[in-house]
Image 1 (cartoon, chains in turn blue, brown):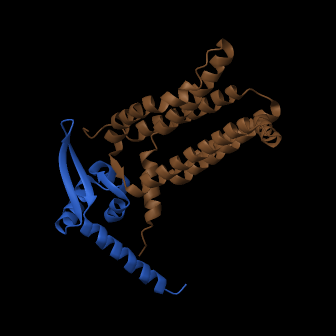
Image 2: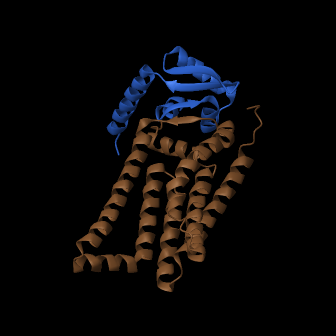
Image 3: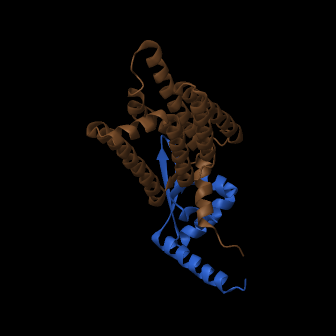
Amino acid sequence: MIMSQLYVVESADFLFLQYQLQMTPGNLSSHLSKLEKAGYVEIVKEFIERKPHTALKLTKKGRDSFKEYQQKLKQVFSGLPK
Amino acid sequence: MKKPDLREIEKNTYMSYHQDGLIDIFVGFYILLFGAGILIRTVTEFSTWFIIPAIFPSIMVPIWISFKRRITIPRIGFVKFGLRSANKLMAVFLGLTVAGLGVFMVFGLGGSIGHSWALALMDLIISNSMIIIGISAGLISSLFAYTMGLKRLYVYGLVSLVMFLVGHFMAIQFEYFLLTIGSAIVIYGLVLLRQFLQKYPLSRGD
């Protein structure tokens, strides 16, 4: 779900993802760090007006992998009997 | 296993970012000011109505962005939409500009040609202006509703169409319709804003 959400936008912040995906901060944070480790998500921590801000976006690798995953899913679904 | 519907996710993302009602308040206020401008002209002969659509966006867009920063982003976070969404909106704006220029040219050429058919066409357009404005408002709202995925814009378009049609057949003045539609949209926007503020209070130390 995190990958799908980030795929349709250019970037989003932590709070936005949390509301969209209805996840707790801890849960979202642990998923994000796994995705970051895999090189799928880029996490940019910055300060905006002296407040901490976490911006998230898919890396090129993440975007390509998600596209590939989508195509594979499409093949699986098209192979199923109607 | 469920296949993720990216179009649906994109639409929901867009809708959740505009559930604050700010876009409704600003669009409604724009229509309201336009109506007020025409009313002032008919009462005081002071022609302000044509200035409003010209200066409003340049003043209101920065205010809208500042409201978004102060009200929406601290509550639900920030999202930057991709080029695809921006391109779709840009295409709609360009289409509308071209259509607007087309109408302007039809009127301009119609007046300068002076042919009987051109003058008859202009008479037909002027005498049915309320119907044409109603249909245009309906089409433009629907176009934005489709592009932005905001279903309430379809309702605004339909209400405008019905009101202008009623206005045409009941011979009610144009500005009163603008004032009514503008007020209704502003009020609905305020209701949405109130719901948004209640649903997403500032409680996370943001």
